[in-house]
Length: 218
Image (cartoon, rainbow, N blue to C red; front, side, top):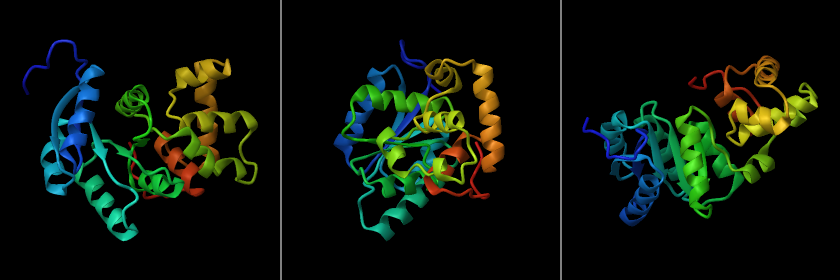
């Protein structure tokens, strides 16, 4: 691959979307945030399949308010075409069920178009670091783990909620004034109690209220 431009950190971002103007705007934000836009394309499976291999994350502008059948079929096709490359969806939809469905189908995160650029860039970096990104308000409205037969302690519930905000262990430890090791011990207990293997499955559990053993692990 060609050398990266001076001043960028090396993370390669593929921008996809059906509107060229929106793709260009997202690309400018990404470049301005010190990341490298490796390419851009339409939301078409074949286009994504050809380009996703050269990217570390796909930023996908997608209307999640389209007719249900068309929306879900298209979303599944696009996520499959990304072939394991994490996908961060940018959408104007703020309906909790639509956002939850996107996460359940395999998106690594969803950012609303109404959010500030700083939050958008933060979401990209969380996903690049292997985390998941969910709107805090959305997580609160569909968060079901706390009602799961009281299996989690209050502290474990707090940690799960912070995980749904895309925070990593170090930040969670700082927020709760506990050690990084304590956070890891709590997560181990949470994973065992809820029968999930990792943070991504925990996120999907929080959305769905149940564990899907067929979830792809990252």
